[in-house]
Amino acid sequence: MSQPANTEEEIISEFEVFDDPMDKYEYIIDLGKKLPPLDPRYMTDEYLVKGCQSKVWLHAYEKDGKIYYEADSNTAITRGIVALLIRALSGKDPHTIVNSPLSFIDAIRLRSYLSSQRNNGLTAMIQRMKDYARAYIK
Image 1 (cartoon, one colour):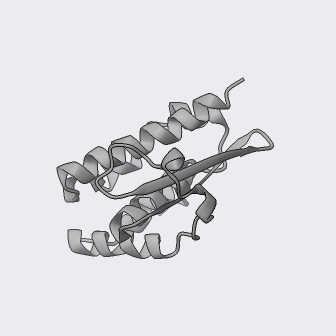
Image 2 (cartoon, helix red, strand yellow; image 1 turned 90 degrees about the horizontal axis):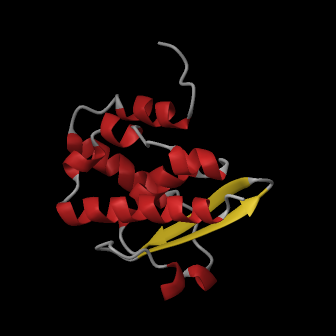
């Protein structure tokens, strides 16, 4: 098997080892447990992602032309989902983020084992991350 060329391919490869959707779900929760805690100053309404069933706080900053994300959530599965998104998008230039199709989401069938409300939250998180990136395009 060839080496993954980018972060999204790495994520897809990691999920290929799981046959059972519950194993994928548990893996996502484990990813959320590894997400560094968000500075409490960003856990305010200003950073809250609207449209999520759970509370999700998302902060972005620019450094050397790249956008970096930090986030937290009050539920384990949502922490894992946002951890995946951060891994896929953080550290990239704004144009790359805005134009990213995030094809790993379909490749790992993420939406298929989320409730409709969690799917709406996933869409809201992606939109917010891309909106942050748009704000840094000069």
